[in-house]
Amino acid sequence: MEPRYKRIVLKLSGEALAGEKGIGIDSNVVRMYAKQVKKIRDEGVETSIVVGGGNFWRGRDSKDMDRATSDYMGMLGTVMNALALQDALEQMGVVTRVMTAIEMQKVAEPYIRRRAIRHLEKGRVIIFSGGTGNPYFSTDTTAALRAAEIDAEVILLAKKGVDGIYDADPKLTPDAKKYEDLSYFEILSKELKIMDSTATSLCMDNKIPLIVFGIDNESNIYDVVMGKKLGTYVK
Image 1 (spheres, one colour):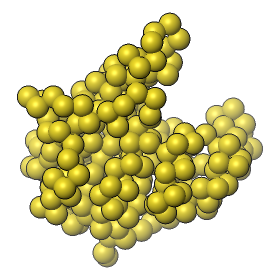
Image 2 (tube, one colour):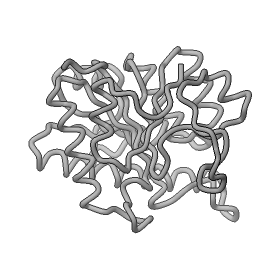
Image 3 (cartoon, rainbow, N blue to C red):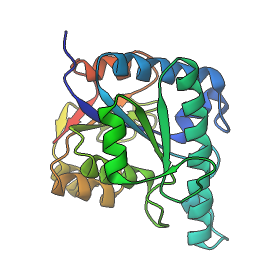
Image 4 (tube, rainbow, N blue to C red):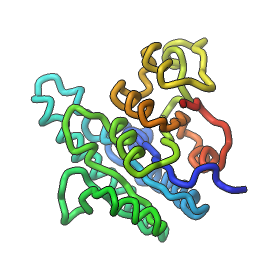
């Protein structure tokens, strides 16, 4: 069976990398995700990953700190997650490049669009870290921006603890309705908080499909790429 997509952006939250601990990095969980990434890369899928940093620091949650400073701290957290994921992938023989939006050349490559596309064409996995390099923008917005820049066919938004988009929080509302398909306009008009409005608008303007699915089942990343209908499809 052929993969449904040739070039993807996978969005992983920092919390997903923390596992049950909720903070820091769970090496077993990181290896589990790395195995899935290797599996789709071995199918010939050009794979890029955007990582969050919420397992170390969430910029918007700091009430007493200057917002820009807090956001920069969060960006540094994404770099730590990217390096951990790179290490796990390379231990499995997957050639991986970490690219940062904030230059730190002793740690990773600076993000350059043409270089990123070349890495993908050579079969390397790219991990985008450092957010957009600017405060006030989320890593969801980073995923939308990078997907547009590298001409990705889809964004895979992997969520921990939820398997799609619902009309209410399923943890608080047991009879919440799950959506199978949505438009970006509906997400904005219904104020569904699956992505921030900047990321949603960017995806809508550039006509980038989005699949929101649960990551608690370790095979879901592979299954979605291979065309299995999981989660919620947004177009």
